[in-house]
Length: 112
Image: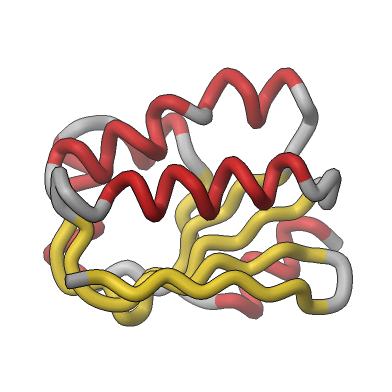
């Protein structure tokens, strides 16, 4: 089960993930990211401090937006991954394609 919340803070759109992102729940992550892009805000932060598990379908959601983020000059930053989740991103090379930092403060530094 996953809970995904979105909120606008300062100059960024924050998506908060809590729980497991699997094949059946990845659609909610996809909808949240799509809505954030449509909002026109150029800074999107993904708060993964509450992310317990992410399947290949969930990772696929992130991958599907890489080109769109680049084309629209959107700063898309993931933060707060557990060591286990971070390892999955690294094994697949997503840490080379996505901006991944330790904390919201580090994400803010990247857009400053």
